[in-house]
Amino acid sequence: MIISSPVAGARILIADDQRDVLEALRLLLKGDGYQIDTADSPAAVLQALERREYDVLLIDLNYARDTTSGQEGLDLLARLRAADESLPVVVMTAWGSVGLAVEAMRRGARDFIEKPWDNDRLLTVLRTQTELGRALRRSTRLEAHTRALSDGGPALIADAPAMQPVLQVVARVGPSNANVLITGEHGTGKTLIAQALHAVSPRASRPMVTINAGGVSEGVFESELFGHVKGAFTDAKQDRVGRFELADGSTLFLDEIANVPPSQQQKLLRVLETGEFERLGSSRTRKADVRLISATNADIHAEVAAGRFRQDLLFRLNTIEIALPPLRGRREDIPRLAKHFLGVHARRYRKTLTGFDPSAMQVLTDYAWPGNIRELDHAVERAVLMAPGPSVRTADLGLRPAADSAGRLEDMSLEEVEAILVKKAMARHGNVSQAAKALGLSRSALYRRLERHKL
Ligand SMILES: Nc1ncnc2c1ncn2[C@@H]1O[C@H](COP(=O)(O)OP(=O)(O)OP(=O)(O)O)[C@@H](O)[C@H]1O
Ligand SMILES: [Mg+2]
Image (cartoon, rainbow, N blue to C red; front, top):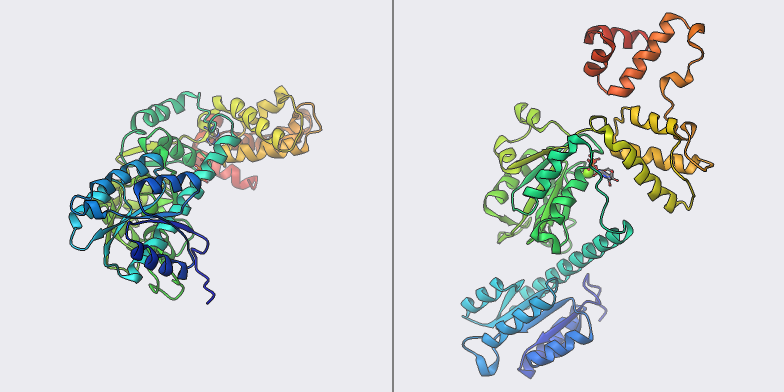
């Protein structure tokens, strides 16, 4: 029989001291596509782990010599957890010894099976743990990868006075379990700050799990967040672990929180209040210990006022709120950020560039950056590609300030000069109120001029 299973090739180590049990389990699990090794003592388990990697460990807690207390099994469990936190351990206990199973869960077992076992339940538990373990390891590897790329931790450049309160909050609140809401325009560094909060927390040994509420349908969001069981909907061909469960013991980063649909806001509120949730299509209530960091570029308080976002949910999310300033509110950081991105892209495209011409740097510092740090990153990337070297000139930036395209002042009409000044003020300040202030105009007077010059 050919079996194609999502866990095909996964390797499980089974530990039991009864030969017939080992054989029965081996047959059952082979049939589901697993590769099986067996161990008949705790010592054999530890030896096997030194030889190869396993996706899941299935261990019996009630050894023949020790049927009542299960102490030997619990000791083994403790040693396994100490050696590798990410390795899923499922325990088997004799029927009726739920107390022992609970103790095992408290000591880090991921799930338990009572003997005599139910085949379907056993297979479901093992599939779930295999998938979960693999997902966890994938994201751990990814994190290690990005860390290695940015040699010495991800760059967080924040010397500007406007960033000092942000850094203080990260240092004070990061290590706690408090839920944090990060607000700010697109590209201001919300994701980076979420990573920084996680990195300074005791949960940092596990990868942060991310879910984005933007642009997904309600059903997809729910099953991504809470998982589903096979048959919950037409395409649910197998059980699936949700991000909330995946983030157990770690941090969940819920991006674009303002886009969470109303029905899901209700469910999110419940899980934040109780830590309890169900996978889609399942009635089994699960628990997970999750620290939530959320982010939005919307004005969430306005969303609440407009009745689109639940106030009680906002109260749960923003125990601490971090408002990231736009880049035009922290221009002091532009030179360092620009040099940082220059280094990154020059390495990436194997170009030798010494830095920016003073006039090019002036253009960068004056520009309004509506797309914030991400836009600066892209502008520098483009410049790196375009610049013949040895340094980046204004012309390489493609950000020509308004005055650049102008001819000599004395050859221009008053109208033309006005258009240039208005354009420049808008580029520098990014919004009408501040541009109007800088020009000494009222907002409505500036609006009229913007219209007249078709800006
Ligand atoms: N303080 C910083 N120092 C260095 N790089 C930064 C800093 N802040 C942001 N960046 C970089 O700028 C880019 C955009 O940042 P990030 O993705 O965190 O923004 P965001 O606010 O989450 O954007 P969006 O709203 O689009 O999700 C990323 O490449 C990030 O690494
Ligand atoms: Mg982001």
